[in-house]
Length: 280
Ligand SMILES: [Zn+2]
Image (cartoon, rainbow, N blue to C red; front, side):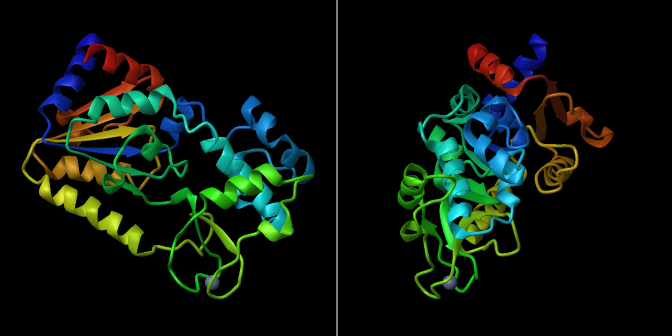
């Protein structure tokens, strides 16, 4: 096992470019499980479970609330759950420690805004399913994205009996319609110019890495994921100097075609990252 860790560190050290692909597994190893009805969920969202039968953060995010007051009670609470302490998990801190001096780019489906909080540069980050700190018009009447920090914090603090005060509910400044968090929970999700710019930056990063020593570091991405895992495998297959490194708990899958250029570590991602930083 020690040799595997050493090999991972050597590849990172030697890399000209590192692409990090992260999904729920990384967040879960850091203690944020949006799928689970665990103690943290009951503590933070127990009233939503009782009132609506919502059993996870994910179910809440997709739930059709009867009113804007109730919808924002949930979403502002979710915002606070992710961001109240402005503190990220040791897993996120160690990941940043591992690559902060390297030429990196991050692509993630996580919407908890923890990459930026951990120190990752906004210019090197593509949150393709959005970010819980941002708001958009629910009617998609225009494609501006708004900072939601202030209003979300206030709605979280002033909500009572599962409702936020009506006068705090954000309204679209153009059409006057309802707003929603800029996370992909329905077809309204806006791929606005800043989303497009991040997408372009990601594509450009891959293009620029062509022929160079490229590490594709995948963290907690599920087997069926087509948005990170499949492209990472394709790039590894096409780039002779690429190395595919996958960290996952119980779900390591490496196709035969790229096995000679791949390293997989099965285990708790947080513990693996801590170990890597320690050995660095
Ligand atoms: Zn609008």
